[in-house]
Length: 67
Image 1 (cartoon, rainbow, N blue to C red):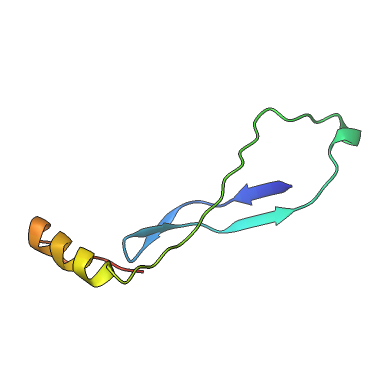
Image 2 (image 1 turned 90 degrees about the vertical axis):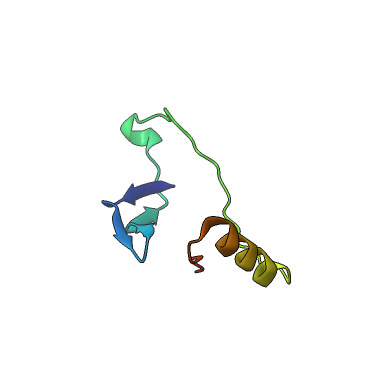
């Protein structure tokens, strides 16, 4: 997988960037892997979230940002 990542911008306090990916065969062009990153991203929710948000806001004095 070959990936391109554009410049970072900030929207609503979160980093965003344009990303494009494609499957290509680079061995024929004499490219070889110098860095491989394998990561997984997950989102979770919980019935405890309202309590957590209230406790965070009381503790920090700041409004929580939820996406």
